[in-house]
Amino acid sequence: MAEINHFEYGWITPALSYALSVLGSVLGLVCAGRIRTAGTAGQRAWWGLLAAWALGGTAIWAMHFMAMLGFAVDGTRIRYDVPLTVASTAIAVVAVGIGLAIVGTGRLNPVRWSVGLRARSTLGQPGTPFPSRREMPPR
Image (tube, rainbow, N blue to C red):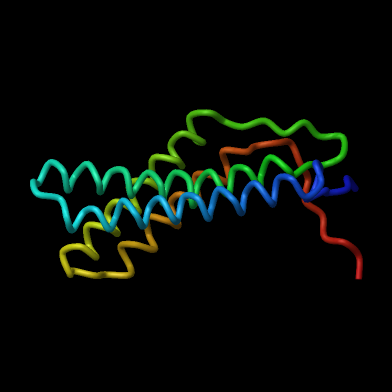
């Protein structure tokens, strides 16, 4: 059975992953705060887009992708399916954008929010296909 290594490159990938999450969260919250002070609908949309990109694209997606780069399986080459990976990025950004719109308008529905983030994970995981055979260890 192949050995799984979650820290192929040491602590650098989890540390960078955490830093991306913090950076994306701070930037996203700053941009989201600017939505309220924007003077026009176009400015609100622009700040909303930037907030969704920072939160969904950096704080969520890039953080997970950086962590995945540190994952390895002995004897297996891990490749990424580019279309599925791009789609998972878009879904994360759109889900956060919808969430920001819901919160901003006061029509909060947690089901809508969780469905979008779940879809991102559902596409992101198959976006990393590699040949494997799953076996349960004997007890």
